[in-house]
Amino acid sequence: MRRSLRLALPLAAVLAVVMVAAGCGSKSSSSNSSSNSNSNSSSNSAASASKSYDNGSAAKGGVYRVGWEQSFGFTNNFDPTGEYLGNAWGIYVNLLLRPLIGYKHQPGAAGNQLIGDLAQSVPQPTDNGLTYTYKLRTGVKFAPPVNRAVTSKDVAWAMNRLANPKDGGQYSFYYTVIKGWDDVANGKAKTISGISTPDNQTIVFHLTKPTGDFNLRMSMPATAPIPQEVGSCFEGKPGDYGRNVISSGPYMIQGSAGTFSSCSALKPFSGFDGANGNHLIVVRNPNYDQKTDPYRKNYPNQFEYRVNSNADDIYAKVQAGQLEDEQSSPQPKTIRQYVTDPNLKDRLLPNVGDRTWYLTMNLTQPPFDDIHVRKAMNYIINKEALRKAWGGPVLGSIATHIAPPVMYNNGLSEYDPYSTPNESGDVAKASDQIKQSKYDPGKTGKCTMSQCKSVLMVADTRALDNRMVPVIQANAAKIGITFKVRSINGAYTTIQTTNKNIPFSERPGWGKDYADPYTFFGELFDSRALIPSGNTNYSLVGITPQINTQKKLGVTGNLNNIPSVNSDIDKCIVKTGQPRINCWEGVDKKLMTQVVPWVPYLWSNNVTIVGPKVTHWNYDQFSDGTAYSQVSVKQ
View (cartoon, one colour):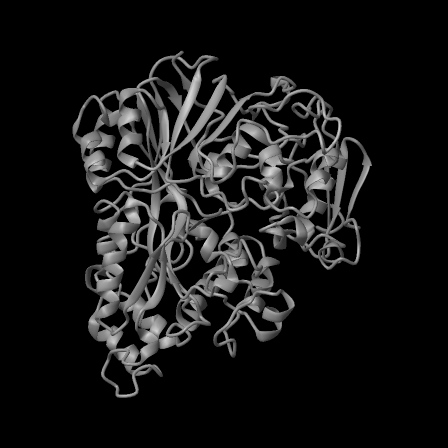
């Protein structure tokens, strides 16, 4: 899923304190989930606990307030067709949108178990795996100003919007297995021939090949119903629908009122002032029927998300009860306070997050167009120092390859192709790689050519980034690479725009889109998923001059002989069971040794700090964040 703004910053001591507290009758509960554990070195002990929190009885009412550091960072202005931020997904699936398939909004393995959401149940495929038929629940209605029943045609319309590249879909490649999808994407057809709606309560998908994870794909927010009468107002305007999202869930954006009459009469809802604004407020959907929804609890009357550039101020307000929750990155001093204060420690809640944080290198830009330079970066980076920059030895593991071992049922847990003593970097090994590169003609062990000097690094402006950047600069200087740093508030938009030609960034992290390794490889490394904006294959793996021209990517640099893993992905996607997992492990190894697009450095856990007014809190494994549909607050 997605890049997430949630950071994992607890000290290792957090684990001991939390577990001792749980044994002494703490109001936060903990359970181990073996499916979410991983380890890869002696420096990498990590917890797999799932944490929830109770401080009184859950009850209806009140306002749940969340402080959001720096900016929302939405990748498509909160328009679900293209929005790809994990934190936005958490709001969507808990509060606003009901895809055909959903989750229980629980931590651990139970949180990745599929359920019928808008659909009555999770269907089994027919026609040798080529046909999926979904029956919709009755009684599900759109919020104002639409005020009508959700039908199968609304799901079909959302899918057609996702297929149209003019509408900003950022992960439409997941659905190219639907017959006729590419015809819409290429402008040869208006609607997807492989989707039919025989009646208002039935939608049928016909695939071109068996796709074992298709139900998982139908859990993603872009597949949720969109009413055509409103959605058509934003044709060819990616992101604009974000301020007028029509809810099919228990809550709606504040200001969604009245009855829809025309596009010209539709004004942006007041509860959201855009991705660069400072608030998102959602209130109850008056057309929602709890009887149609067995898992969402919907306790608060209102949720308020407000941007605050000062992380310390956010945590001070959480502690004082002026906020209930945060999307932020606490300073180490904040973590120490919660670890050591018996009155606060129960409110620090770590949970396993299925994600990798990494440094990305653009294979088309010097000096990273040389694989030996990319390998040298993997050897020279002090991953332990980066982990300390996050706040010290964290409740999580140092990453040594692409996807967390949990995605392979703990396979590849010992795989570490660039092992260094204490994961702290190795100058000798890095220098040996530099000597083999074209940027060290004198074989000195350092990049001596001009292409290695003042290389552009894009960073974000968070406190965490400010701590990481000096570590990276100092490490790279040991092999002759120097960086010119450009810090941007909300750096994702820049690095996701291909014609910016960004050589290097320390910002990225990636969490699963759903519980299958494919979600780490399809969007991140398949060149068929490259797009000019909103692109997440930052390294441009598999790009060719033809792709660059055809997709109008605007990439300049070395486009010759860029390695590809497209065929490897195609081989894995049709497999099931253990052979599928083994296949993805092979792709991971190939990427780390034959392509080398990243320096992965952290498999993180999420940590949330909640306020004193919270009476119940739960983690949502799917969205890797707060399960807003389960929380409650004192009035």
